[in-house]
Length: 218
Image 1 (tube, rainbow, N blue to C red):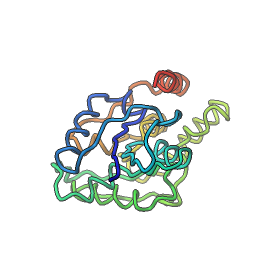
Image 2 (cartoon, one colour):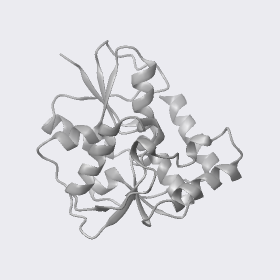
Image 3 (spheres, rainbow, N blue to C red):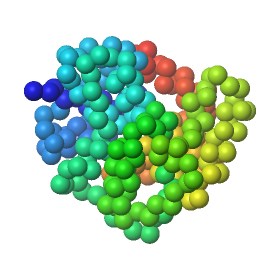
């Protein structure tokens, strides 16, 4: 039998650590037996062969499934979309564009689950030209290989390509990028749990220092 774990990822653990147990409790009540896993995807997950990790972060999804043999991954959004029950709030009247993060560009099943969930919350989607498997980086992934001014140019360009002022993201770093680019980011989990999205620390250097501290500690 597959042992299943939930790894919230560095970004969410920094952003809203209280969400971890809310999600874990929901999974154990409505999905099956799931254990919390807090080892960062940059390190050996120390799990038995055949384990599955349910993740929120697109970067975690890519690293866990590609770097560590015998580990499979599934997005939390795929899991929830497949369940018969979730207490979706009603966001009637909200219109968003969706930014799909780079690491899961080749996983249309996640793109479809995200849009299905948005539909279940009565959110209207106005797609940007480059979405899903054709999505363009929000700009954050260029750090630190490009100078900051060029990174911010990419962020502004990607944000400008969004038809709506409200942009649904499902990566914490994308919150920062869309905020810098002048849009109103709405993280999917915040929408699902009825919470507001907060940019918090969005200075690109400070944010990546905060991420690295978490990675080193976990």
